Image (tube, rainbow, N blue to C red; front, side, top):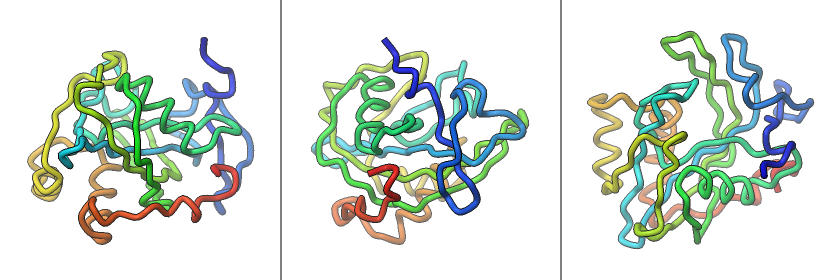
Length: 194
């Protein structure tokens, strides 16, 4: 059973303070308001990244290659709890070693269909066992384990149709070094996500 508050997206003002909520199914339009999202990079125990392809039926960026999982924290839901819920729903697995690596990431992008994505979107990394992943086809069309350096090379080359948020995140992540040195910065999250 789905929780009503998890189906609501947290809206923000220009300073990043919560101002209310809106049903998730209604928030993404040509006039999408600034809201809270999350973006997750999952690695296996060998250090490979799980790269996914968004389901073809998705409203925003269908079929586009992206990082491991994306979603929205519900009203009064911590980032950690939301990440575990989203990863469980999209990829059917549990995670360990959850770290907030880009606590202040935000972006705005417009799809070819005119749908706007405008999010304050903390970026996290976690570890999952490869054998645990079971794709939810309503969310994820496909997935591939790939070395981090290869993913960065693909993102930089423009050779694949990569989500705009992932392309921007990869650029920011390169500045903080290799995944092995990413540190947890969850203490920098706003109180409403703690």
